[in-house]
Structures are given as structure tokens and as C-alpha cells.
Length: 88
Image (cartoon, rainbow, N blue to C red; front, side, top):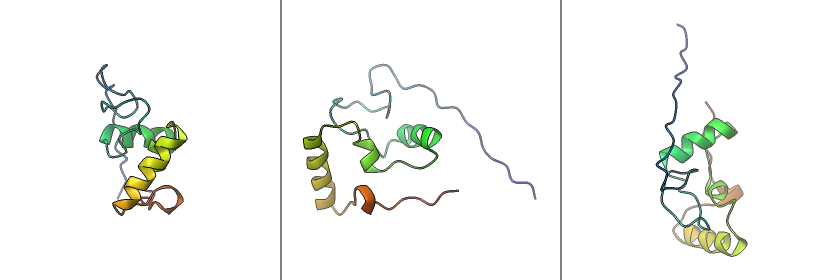
């Protein structure tokens, strides 16, 4: 049986939201790692699914530290400890 790879095109986000994650947030805060737009746009660029560390890459150190602590307090691993989805 022949394998078919689905192709699709992401429409651009609305102009009044973050152009990386299609979510309205302060530019100093992390992108919405759980946004489907962000996940698929990131995958198209990097060939892998984004992590919270990726979503915080552009943030100042104090924001990264605060978000990392809050996520870990909620049982969400960040950085090298983050589980990654298997590559397809």
C-alpha cells in the first residue's frame, strides 16, 4: 500500500495577535506552546514539535525563570526534561 503524506497550508494569523503563535499576549511573554498554529508553524520550520523552552526562547531571563518555575510547580517539565513527541 502506498503511503500518503498530507500537505496543508497555514493561513496567516489575524494582524492583532502574535504572528508566531496566533495568540494575543505581551511580546515579552512566551508564545502559546499549545496553540495549534504555533505547533504546526514551528514543526514546518524546525522539523520537530515545540517545547516550552522553545516558546520562551525570546523572553528575557527573568521571564523564563518565572515561567519555568510556575510550569514545574504544576508538574510540567521544561527544557531538557521536557518530553518530546516521537518523530513521524
